[in-house]
Length: 437
Image (cartoon, rainbow, N blue to C red; front, side, top):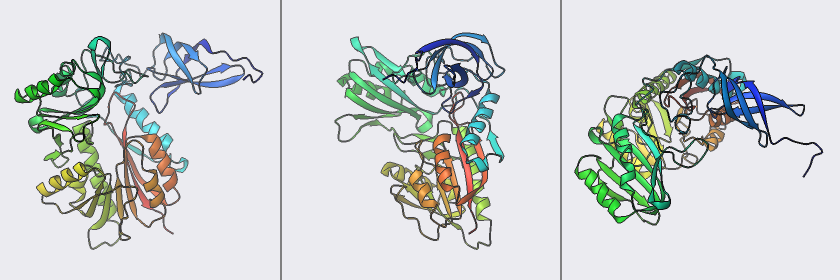
């Protein structure tokens, strides 16, 4: 249908990148047909002067770099030669300082407008390469039986092969290079979550759509017997329960310096070192909130989306804690982690959105998935919970949920943690205090 104006599908322009969008792309603007249009351009940095082919058919418009005329001050040479094709590290062309700054600014932009002037404490990455102790890879078996293993190609849902992944822990990189051989002879596609097991030997959690060749299981068994991996868990499409070979239990370093058991295939932070800093910060924030007022007993606290107890093992030392997790295996791991430390906290398997915390609850800690916790925010806004600590891995859903809480709570502190260096993702911890009245 025509609106009376002729629209050009694409144009070629020269422009300067002014900022970075929440999804990681650079942003510039072009004048077209008397209208100023925002253009998102992947793999660019603020200050880059570029010649672009701009697709105007979408909003925002999308740009493709034809020529990098002049580099901005934040641009560096990516240490990985596959970074432009692989979608795993979309900010590898930015300096570490720029990543730290831009992450904080994206969190600031997501805060309610009245909160944007507050200080944001930034925590640099302990290491920017060889830091990932957990990663999910995609596997596809194509025509001719060729097996492709990798992160998704930038802008697609298809895995892309790389020679070396320099952000993986060396033990995971060694097994990544071997993965394609396990799946030869099969069909379909799936995901492989890699983590570290006991003694930092890799473990694999395979979820497969299609058919694995019968020799695949023999290959997994041989890898376990040879000590290449500690264990493998395989869930095929029609299987009622997963097959287990060896011990596929993931472990990571807890924030208290002791090993932390995770659920096979369950959640765990990507960087052990950054996670320790985040967990210690969250626990210290809870302690500070608990010391306000004239409390004579431990603060009654509820931790939602508690997982295997990553934060619980610290929170349970100073609060009267209930841990809520929907995954039964995560609950089992949390009970084991707390019990191994002699800590008393109640672990219950329930949906965080529906869990009825007691009226005496003074602190709610939540660490939801990337989709956020809208239903929890709506409930908190109507209760008298005095303190909230929200841990988020997505600034946009965090901002959506904080907009719900703004009328009921005031911000006490905001901090960012570089959990995913070389990417546009950041971990945020914000503490909220109930407004009087």
